[in-house]
Image (cartoon, rainbow, N blue to C red; front, side, top):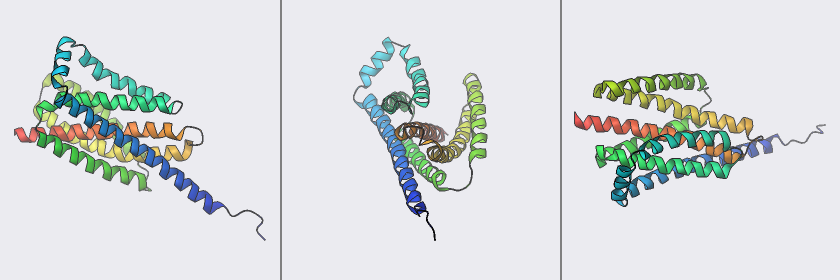
Length: 237
C-alpha cells in the first residue's frame, strides 16, 4: 500500500501557475516600458519639442547625460532589483523615458513610414522569438554566447565606423544587429524562464520579473533601432 501522499500533480500545476504568473509580470513590465518610451517620444516630438530643443541648445552637456544615464540605471536594475523591486521598477521606467527622448531626437532623420515599419517589424520579430525562447526545449545558451561575442565585435566595429563614416558599412551592420538580437531575444526569454525556475525561492519574483523585463526591453529597442536604420537607408537609395 502506498503511504506517501500523491501530490506530484498538484506540485507541477503549482509550478506552472507560478511560472505563468512570472512570465505575465515580466512581459507586462516590458510592454509597459515600451509604451512609456513611445509616450515619452511622442511628447518630446509633439508637445514639448520647442522647450526640449532650447534646453539642449542651452545645456549641450545634457546630451551626454541622457546617453550615459541609461547605462548606469541598467546596471542599478541588474544589481538591486531582486532586493528592491519597487526601486528596480522606478529605474526601469526612467530608462524607458530617457530612451523615449533619445528616439525623439533621432526621429527627425526618418519618415513616419520608416518609424511605423520599424516598429511593426521589431514587434513581430520580438514576439515570435520571445515565444520561441519561452517554449522551446532546445538549449539556446550556446547560440546566446555566440551572439554576445558577435555583439561585442559589432560594437567595436561600429565605433571604428564612426570615424570611417561609411553608410554601406552601417547598412550591413544593421542587418547583422537584427540577426544578433533575434538570437538574444530567444535566449533571454529562455534564460529568464530558467532563472525563475532555479532561483525564485531565493529572490523576489517581482524583482526577477523586472530584471527580465529590462533585458527584453533592451532587445526590443535594439531591434527597433536596427530596423529603423535599414528602412531609413533603403529609402535613401
